[in-house]
Image 1 (cartoon, rainbow, N blue to C red):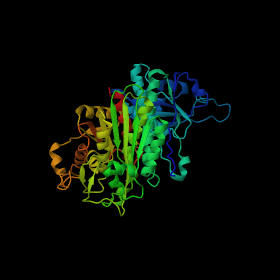
Image 2: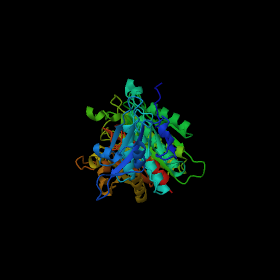
Image 3: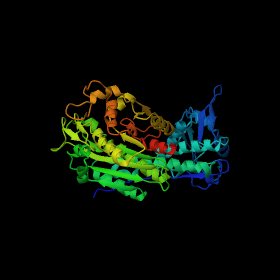
Image 4: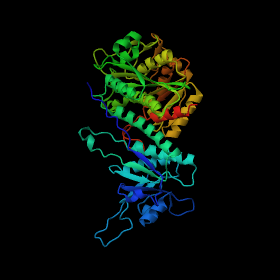
Length: 525
């Protein structure tokens, strides 16, 4: 049996009601550092602006922190950081003001203090403090702000910290990865700040799960393995789960999943995980996630370089699973169902071919033109099943679907399509709130004719390969399988992967989409 994934959890975050000026934590030996904010000076002012707690730290340590920040070259921009290593005295005759205090001060730029700025500040602190035991901070605290503002800033800071605290295990040396420090928030206790920490931890934990699953090598992670992980995690969370194997898929007509998986020795699966709240549900939201555990392109084989990141081609399925588990953990008032169509797109004697006609769930026939457009094949099955069987109020799919989305929008925005303007606006707003940005794209009806087939109900790709708009054509193809549902499609081919760390985003699988969807569920009235 394949090993279980190591689904790690983010570091601990605790609240301390005491202010930095008189906190006993600073002298009990439990802290490795104190982190304080610096911001750009106001227009007309020279130098940097001290944030909440910075003056208290300066007085307690007996150090001009503003001068140290300027000497370090800080501008106060969000995400800057500088670690001041304080010297220890030599001999008992020398007494320094900070002798009994934490031996490091971390100066962190907070910009204008927006949610994005504070997420970046939290991320910078997480990276600066990796390998330490604990760090206390006044970042995100403002003595003069309303409690709702403190809750908002606390959540943004903690999310940034926990997201950037993630690090991939590195093979045989996975135990050598330096753990992130415990974070202690000074000047805050319980109430809205406590609820904000809980919400941030739920969101970050969902993202960690997506990253862990998507970063697992495909030599371990076949469809059966993902299904086993989903069953284990769902059972633990009190979420019911159903897994269909090859026989059930064939008997029920899931031709798209079976076609894509036909060339692999690892047989496909379909996972359906259902969360039902204890009270009558306000809405039923179904999230479908593309789950290609490895993609060679099939007979339409990819170049070697394009295959390298393909272990993350099941990121959409991981997001769907993390969303239903996050809904259960947070006690969402909505019924949430995740549908994970899982297959491995390999080259084999039984591989499906260009020019095949495949009958997907519900009976629609699809003319195959490119076996590397496999994501839309498995999604056609899953979306048609969700429409026919699950009866959702809202249907959302998440998929690393097209390179065209990356060409058009880069790696900072997902391409967002939808049949309902209110749903598109709600998902866009959730993306802005979480920093997982999505850009609304057109479902251009005049393009539909390019998907007309002479031998099947629909072509898998556009008739004219030189038309461009590959992401639009993929969305139009998927639209055929959602009936009249309120439906949205997130093409996350650009945002689901990163080649380097950047603020709260980590190299490899980014986990994009889990926080956006959980925020959408929280906002959904």
